[in-house]
Length: 272
Length: 261
Image 1 (tube, rainbow over the protein chains, first blue to last red):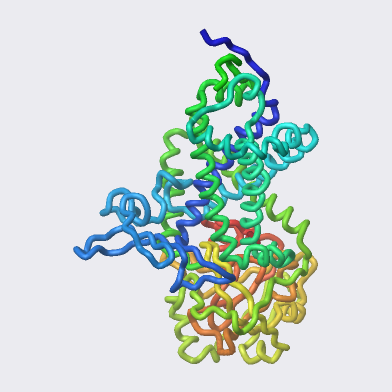
Image 2: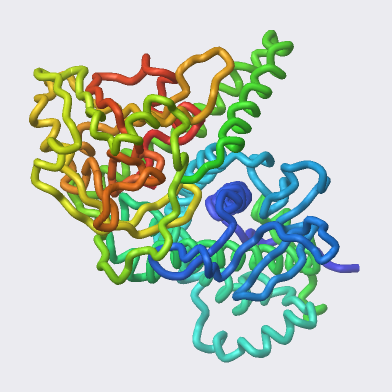
């Protein structure tokens, strides 16, 4: 029989900011797709070269004359009917939309409301991120739990190999994040998040006037919009892997620890 | 901005439908619940306006670009040829009979012809136009500083906002009520050094798709703030009782009045 050994793994403010973040990122992503749908094309540089978007979702016609959803990436077009460009009932004119209604907030094509949601969650996301960032510094979450030691860094390859085989630390080793977790969380919370916010701010004409460096950092407003979009999907990629890891490494144990703080590190002797 | 009319109408209709579906539930307080919720959602606009104004200079200049950076194809936002008989008559004569009326809370209400506006010192700027939809174009605009024109009519101390009334009918309403495009900015924005009433674009007389004979350029806000086909300017203390009460055509349909983001 496996021995249960509960350790207090996540402090209250980490848990609270984590779940607020879940709500914010869901709202931001879905309202962001709503905003993207208002002009479903991405460009590079200061302005939009409408003849040469680097990414676009639209409608096209097949050789048989049927309407289809077409996604164009760097000049290559793909039929994405059912998901991108055309989703739902083809007879319904509202089906012609870049991202499908189930992915956007609100579900109808409604840019004004999408912007309201986006900026509302953006402020909540920023405040929540500040609380997390400052608490991490003061509460030594950053130094104690997140920054890997040099010896840990030497084991990145080993840890990655363990992750790929879905083998996870137990016992004493499970009391703290492993090196892959540390590096991933550092990257997401302290690089991806802030850069995504900055790219969003670089789209504000008022901010561009006072802080033109924003445009220099991202190479123009349209580049900033493209980077904002790419980072949002990078974040989605992180969430996907994160959820898979949560599922395969013990979904109830993980959920309990992120809700109550207590994590079962199991039996030391079963260490793999 | 180029929001198609069906989209706008759709936004309006979905709101109307949402309102109608709540009627049978009025007893359940659903109506005030949704108003309460809308207010929370809309509070972000005040936060954005407050914070952006606090951390940006009042007269910070929007980036200006070089001739080489001009958009090859500048997309015309919104209406490209107003279906208004009075406007069409004026256009046929090259706007020779057009007059800009300025009134409201001013000491001296005045009317200006295009020639009179062109006689003021001209300001030319190459700037980026950001549409609320997400695209940007770079264009060269020439016009008269709005502050110069306002100094002529002398705003009264109670004036807080500058209203712009456009000839653009936008859509036909069933009851014949006014659906024409209008916009508003505050006095600080009106006196910003880059806020101009433009009568020329890319070194040519302002073409009709871009707002002839006169359009607003407010370079630190989104495209929909920059009213085209301006016929009349009015200084007011509040726009709460004008049309939908939100200060502009798109604002009345749910877009932010503060469009610096």
